[in-house]
Image (cartoon, rainbow, N blue to C red; front, top):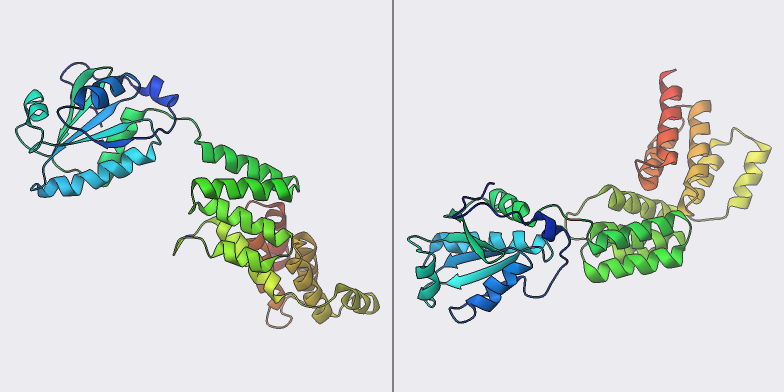
Length: 308
């Protein structure tokens, strides 16, 4: 959304990109504090001024939307809220005729934003333009490090990084799924279940779906692999033993071996036990994650078996 400038539109993107989160991203401003909280602050980041009053219905609609959008920029923009009933000097300075009325101050210069309440999407677009392009947030860097550690088999480092991410953002779904995955690798299904329960109600993501599927497999896995391997050595077509072995392997986290056994059953007897192997294989793919080699290669082989 283009700003309607009282003077030419500001170009805050360059400094916004380098700005990190800061205390006081949302402040109440008075006639007495305006110079410090708005003008001086605008030398480091754009300041959005929300001129409102308690009796103004549209103001009550707009202000929470502004607060949410500003918070999402993690310090790149400040919101200064001004009650014009209590601070008529600021209202006079901006020649306010109706509220809510939004202005922007950047580098000490004032620019008109918009008047009246807007939909959340337009408010977010307005704040996005002011903030300019931003680099990865701190939590993104922590999550990237955690994912790399997990892929390298460094469960301690991964768990510590995911826990750090959750301290920064307790409802982050990627961090929740990652930490639960660490516990699953360590065969601690109880702790993994507790971590998954931290996810917000209704939360869904490929990572969370995968770890939930892996939990289901782990909870179903009971028994020892040695007797089942012995049965298969005696009879390679003992599909019941192979199916049970696949379940144990999947529950232990060896999803590739589990998939191989299930594909063997499908190859030898596609409809065995009402296609139980195919159904279990789909759960294994989900637990591995849609982008994993287990899922990609397994789906290709499954398709060739089913449609050959």
